[in-house]
Amino acid sequence: MKSAYQGAKPVSSLGEAGVGGANRKPCCILERLASLLCLQFNPQFNPTPCTRMPPELVSIIIPTYKEAAGIGALLRYLSASAGPAGGVELLVVDANSPDATAEVARQAGGRVLVLNQKGRAAQLNAGAAAAQGHILYFLHADTYPPANFLPAIRQALATGAGSGCFRLRFDHPHWFLRANAWFTRFDVDAFRFGDQSLFTRREVFLQAGGFREELLLLEDQEIVTRLRRHGAFRVLPQTVVTSARKYLENGVFRLQSIFAFLCLLYRLRVPQPWLVRVYNRLIRW
Image 1 (cartoon, rainbow, N blue to C red):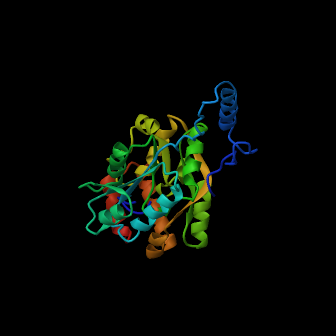
Image 2: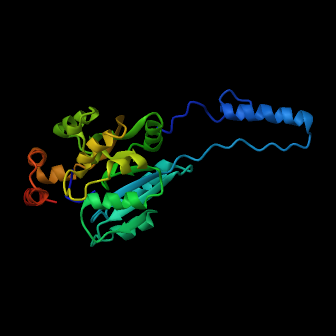
């Protein structure tokens, strides 16, 4: 949680050796044998090469507000991680930033949606509605997923998960931040934060009802409980790396105390406008 409205290579069991190689995919071996049989009876037979299916499209949805300084580098990193196989859609949903966030995102290859309202939940829902992929991946603008995040997400969803996230790591070595991040390995909702990013199948997201737009804080923690009702939630062992800037600007212990206080008020059902007021009064950003 950072503001009221912010934001190893793919593992394959078989390699890419030639037609007769030991690592050839089973489908290609069978196709080759069938081709040889066909050639015995029809010398004019022209076999087609074995082609692999394109990867399932993952729509990465990034809510932004005044992120011109960093959004370009993040989008280039995400594109590079996808590699030549692609299978990724980059969606930046900007809350009408006064800086050049939208233009920088477009130049870096992102598809940009501009909303005239602030509120991260509304931005994330708008991105999900515009996304073309059946896999949705919600990511903060100051958070970098692991290099193999795409195959990791696809594998998790293909093996029974309906949604999930990664573990967390901060880009600063402060011992308290490392201890804080260590707890994100546990599958407990109290340790779920938007900085960990969130992936889900589109149908699970829709069944859960999407993000609650009346929530101006903690919307990315609240949705996890509802996602669990429609499929297994999985915490993957890889880590995303998120910026510790907010902690350094406000003081590590001070900011964590404020977050704990806000979570307590949220659990006590204090109205959201009051939570935002407390947030804006206590946190420098």
